[in-house]
Image (tube, rainbow, N blue to C red):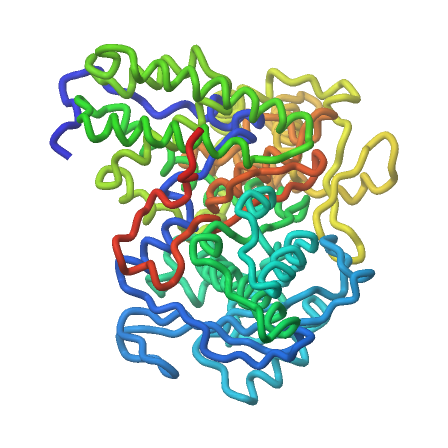
Length: 580
């Protein structure tokens, strides 16, 4: 881009200790680098075909459906040399309301799904029908790429069903209150339960960005959620039923209930997490370097601010923290709108950097991070390149450098983990929690260390505390035969319990955005901050915490319908179109 300033002072990336505090992570928003938007841009640019190809569902809503995504060159029913077909196989259920639960311990759901590599034949369907509805209790094969399930949002689903059956369109304001007809309670991939491992998909360009096959499945689940409500409405009243208006269909996304099972991901994948964060931070840095802002870009920014502001009325939550954040964001957006209308405000040197620096001193963290996403939106030709930098072969960086001297490792700890040295792990509040896996489902859970049993089974997620334990072991004169010239290999032979943090410390010298700069076992730590950070990279909106440990979100709300992907595709679809 020829408008990037080359003579002005260089703007550095925001430092990790600023970006990776939990409070800021819990205020992050989607961006055009989010994986959901990367997927739909590919669909639009490469002219993927997304369609319903099979429907065998009875009047009670029980049966099988198949949807497909065909890549460029793909033909119906087969794969061509230049394209592939992926099929969402759906098993629809007439679920007893007493069995409907979003909890991981549920055993039945309104619908279950798998993403099939290719087009399934009858024998594939029979095999899948015996396994997919069982979810964890069943087994799938390397022909399947994901496993998922969803439940209806009962009140809204039944309202839409009744309205359509009566020949009426549902009220748009009623749809806006929830924003989806169904919500997924898990979308598993990457080799779970027999599915094809991600390393075998790494060479497929369409899955180059993270979580593309899972989000491909969710996009088609969105299609099914409307098709099934229309199908049941028609079964209820064949003579009067109508289909859902196209605009209303587009206003509905897919909900998701996400709990502690997802929270440790960003801790357990530090190198991958670094790549996500640094892509976003580089995009922001480049935009802050823009030398001049055109009238069209100012107009777009003003439009995005108005659309964000208008959409807040539909961001519903009863969680006190989120209620406070939404109220603060409303005030921030009004301040930002006033700021943008100030005469000559965006005509200074590095105008967007000036705007961002104003936000840091004037807006809440929620408002600052919302501005970040809107600034990145202005320059696709500048920032979209970073979407291809968000995957990494993590195994390449797994080895520990055993030849490193302890004095060098000690310097790394003091340099890259300054935040840990500021914490006091002598207090109960700093050690209040412990992470473990549930016996029944092997799902991550959070225990209260001084109130519950099980701390002896703690998972190594207390990075800050363990870094300090490593530092104390290195510095301790009580460790016989250990000094600054001792190698890491020799040290770990004596103290193997520190292997996991030695590896992390060596990784962080190359990947400085790999570590969260906070205490993950503190009494006031909120796991929803971890969840929101990860889900923002997915492209989720309308975060609605149901406690400090699980959250509901919306995915693909307002996204183009399949028939709209190839006609004047608007990549700002994720921003609400109604303005206040």
